[in-house]
Image (cartoon, rainbow, N blue to C red; front, side, top):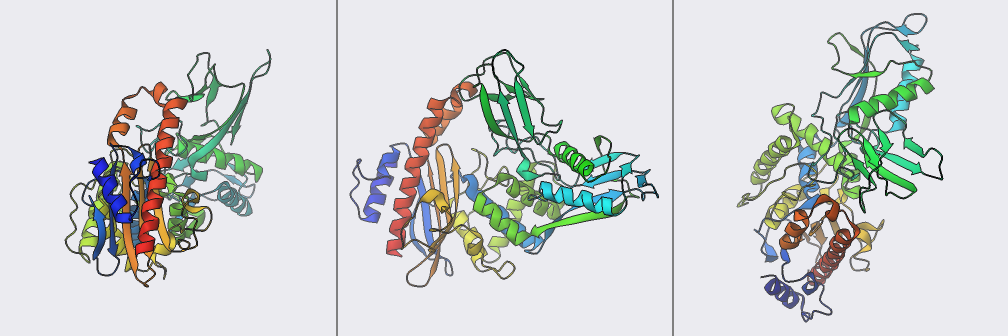
Amino acid sequence: MAAICALALAACVGQPATVETDPVTALGPTAEIAFVVADAETGAVVTAQAADRPMIPASTAKIATMVSALELLGPDFRFQTRVLATGAPDAAGVLSGDLILAGGGDPLLTPQDLYGLAVRLRDLGLKRVAGRFLYDESLLPAVPAINPDQPAEARYNPGVSALSVDFNRWRLMWRREGAGAPDLTRLPPVDAHRATFGNRAQGPGRAVLWDGGAWTIGADADDEGDRFLPVKAPGLATAELFRRLAAQAGITLPSPEAGTAPKEARVATAIAGLPLAEVARLGLEHSNNLVSELTGLTAARLLDGRPDTLDASAAALSGWLGKAVDSTITNVDWRGWDLPNHSGLSRHARVTASQMAAVLRFAHGRRYGGWPFASLLPTAGFRKAFRDRFLTEAAAGRIWAKTGTLHYAKGLVGYLMGADGRTRVFALFIADPAARRAYDALSPDVRSAPDAQRRALAWINTAEQAEQAIVLEWLARF
């Protein structure tokens, strides 16, 4: 089947299907390719292959999340992070009651925002909290990782919380030199980021591992190291960072405790994030998983209240999106659509090219804060988009799309601006299910070893070249 697909594509692009030169054939006999290109206005299909085959969407799933959120929340929606109090400071600046840092799910919250909130409190006369310092992350479910099947140490797989800062990632540096005590640096230096030196070898590619309660640097790790790691307890880490920054602003806070804001608590100060249209643009450009998860959770909360899990939230949002698309576009077959989360970080996720094309057609006819959805996507020829592919003058500004990448699964979904003045939607997915199954069957230490990673990355590079060949040919034709 893969060989037939490759030959069909080669005929479609009008090039010989030689193993030496054709990047589609180079994918190998077990590769699967599915795609569709259709007129954005009429839906007329101009080319397609296996368009109804469920494929792994990877990060192209973020398009479904952002379209749903923009429709439900509105392009001007702003996430809000609040500080509440159960009283006011006295003349000496002491608050006898509680201070509560309440998360609003802002996926772009920064240390600068937290420091600004602390300074505002100091301007209001607060110097010390004699009661409790609570952090309230109850607005959304809190989980230690987006996908527990993904590597625990992968910074693209952080914990999720309504209180998240700096994309829920932190930096660990270490140095071992001679017989002296090893040096360990945590940035930021908060207690939630627990790390220690271990006395066991952890294997190649496993210098730093998570044991469920702390990070361990293996005995076989290099003497010097520098890693960005995912935050496992985002609410606590954010609260501890706020406490540290508050101290710099002249405010003494007790150690943070998890809790919900008492009914009598009133807002002391707050900060609003960027409009959702800008959040979506940044989230899609940088393909940030946490941005998509928090945005999707917040949108799904409007449908059935606070979801309990990412899976339930994604299912609710998918159900709503299907009905919304069906209200304007007919004959969409939603069988096989399955998104376990809002970011596409799952080897179990499935969509078809036809389904993604329908979502793109739905969004094409809308305006989000006055902007077309295509303008929220990366475009060819700028900012090293698409990993420096499509670097031709003919492609610049004519491809507006979202990429998706997992080991042995690739996707590219978006809009093609035709030379005839018409816009076309496209969805292209490439996968090698056999190679993916073999990869998943490996033990964690073998899977993370350099050889397995090199093979997977080599396949991704080949798939990207195949994507480029296919899409550039579409540009020439349409």
